[in-house]
Image 1: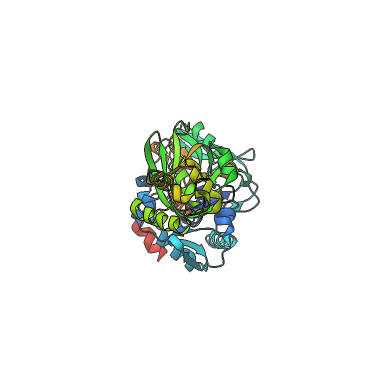
Image 2: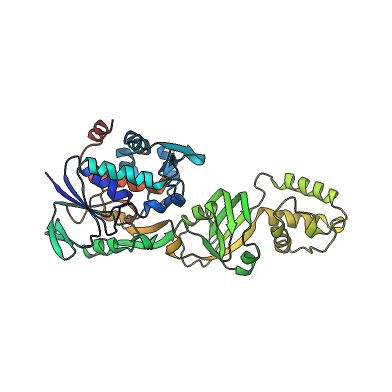
Length: 417
């Protein structure tokens, strides 16, 4: 029987341990005093476990390296995950956008379920354990150095996460372990993260203003890299909210040399219909100043900013406004741009972009191409997704596949159902 060690007790590590324990003797090492410390915080404590979307939908929400996950998703899909958790006693529910949550809205219930699963299959969990080194001889795993002691293992699964939520223990030490064994590392950056604006004064004037059903496009060096519809919020440093977080996953140029977002504040109206709408408002408020005549279109705090962006005089009366000026107002409403100069720190990131270079990993098994018996799972890999449950599914799927090792997908489904 294979003697397997898991490094990291997050979602990827727990699922890897569960899958491996069906055939192996498994020991899971967790540096914290409990499992799933980071998982506890996800979804604002509610834990967006996965999404009900089809495989193509998952690929559409993974900005880069999506095809690498084909085997992992095929081996252990979102439907497999939901069925397994339901079978183990966790009731789930679906919310907007196909997001799956525990029915209790408590991430702790997900962790309790996973913990029970590990206990049921005999996984030995070692808390407050610091793995210092992966031991290798002749390009094959031989064991680990844990708290100064050498312990022998035939197989090691590295699932230490990335750099996000550092207070939960995500310090990136797994990257160093992998690099020490010759693995390449793609540069890491915060993802699903609020964005910092160049015009801080503008954002501070708009701080607290929430926009719903707005369209956003992200541009880098003149090229559109993201387009979405949703909600966002102005803050003292820039912008945040679901739409902004999703856009951040598509950033490629971290110099931010020429990066901006363009907001369509009225995506439901084309230029012609928007002009007709503005003419109706102007007719109603013909004797008012422009700054007081568009509040039905926008939150009041945003009105003077749009007028200024359109290079119009807000003090001018509506009945004096020309068609050319009206068209400038329409342009401002349909493409209100904000220059972006950076992201917030990794402490505020939901996920880490970058990680173990996928060229060094066998996508069919999650095994290292450089070290026999070493596997990777979860956020440590150079693959990340948008919000909506996709990142946790990546963790669960890669964890399960790494735990299975070379078992067939057919055998997996015979065991699941």
